[in-house]
Amino acid sequence: MSRAATSVARFVALLLAMLLPCLVPLPFVPGWFLPQFSAAAATPAAIVDTASFEAWLSATGRPITSRYHAYRASYDTFRRYGLLVYGTPGLVPGNRYSAATREYAMLGFSYDEFTFTNSFFPDDKPAGTTSSTPWAWTGSWQEIPLGTDATVSWLRLTAREKEHVKASVLYYSGSSYGGMTFPALGLSEVNTIVLSPPSWLLGFAMHTKHYWKTATNLRYATFTGKGIGSVGLDCTLTETAR
Image (cartoon, rainbow, N blue to C red; front, side, top):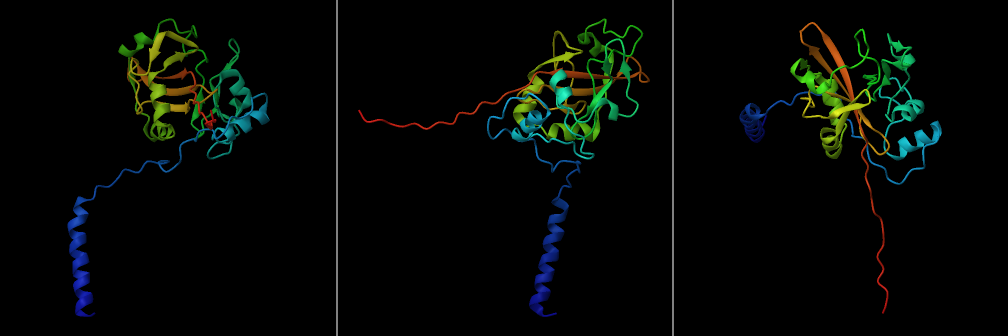
């Protein structure tokens, strides 16, 4: 090796020795590189059936099929609940059905194929109803961090969608119980999984898990909220002669 090459090699080695201690490793988050759902490029046609529903999803930048198993977005579930759900209740292993309310515990899957819990399924207690307001639960439950499932679900939302979710009135089994909100219930991006992001014509849904009174009594709750819209104005101004 020539003297010039040796000097360059020593310089590079010295530079690396100076820089490496300063580098901070970034944590790996599965799905971080995946794009957020894009906004509509043009006004889509009205939704009247499965074909127009899928056309609307494409026009508004929403995937028609889920991430891994290509479950199709359900028009029937959208029509009943106003939510974007992939697959059907019959595809969820171990799903439960309430004959009294005609509700499934799981509606299907989110885009990332987390099981989509149903806010309208009866409570897991003898009466099957919520006798007290969820406002009162906060002193009796302990929210559980939901790991990368929560992280990835929030990464899919735009800043405006996140703001909307955190500022919206939340509903549990169709009731707001006086106006529940994200911060008032002690929720965060760490302990909630966004099952369906808000959009025009689409409400949002969030899954949470918590310990009820004791560390052995594990429960879950699904909160829903109303959608969010965007308005664009495209026009041309023409000055006329006077």
